[in-house]
Amino acid sequence: MVFMATQNPKKPPNPVLPPGVGSDDSVVLERRTQRVKPPQMFQVVLLNDDFTPMEFVVHVIQEFFSKDRETATQIMLKIHLEGKGICGVYSRDVAGTKVDQVLAAARGAGHPLQCLSEPVE
Ligand code: TYC
Image 1 (tube, rainbow, N blue to C red):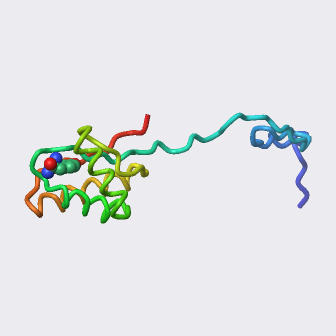
Image 2: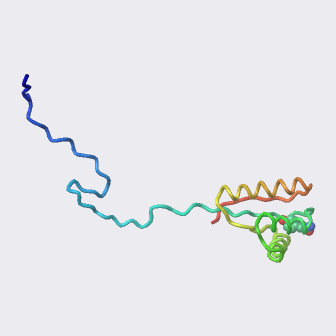
Image 3: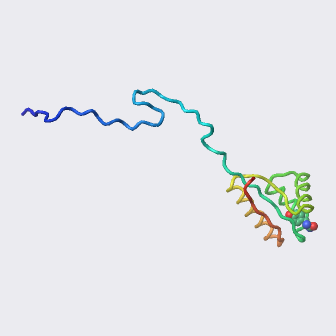
């Protein structure tokens, strides 16, 4: 048996092309200033109090913020004199973990040391 076409052949629908690619395969390059922003960073801050021993704070800064003893002592003294100080700058998750670790160590040792993270700028 022979079948006859009842309609003229149709052009296939236009394919969906990605932006910048023309239907004749030409490519247009667009200049973009910046497509992604760098991620927001968070600084971990220790607060001064009247009860936590200086030596404990130095130990915490060495242990959780990977500072040598001299740098840790300088940061501790800055916090002691100025009320607060930045111990390090990290991604949101890492900063949150540092805060949790510091608070757990402080509470475990019975000290009221306060620690927080805040967006940089
Ligand atoms: N001010 C405390 C003291 O005199 C020492 C201290 C320093 C406590 C830094 C907390 O984040 C702190 N013992």
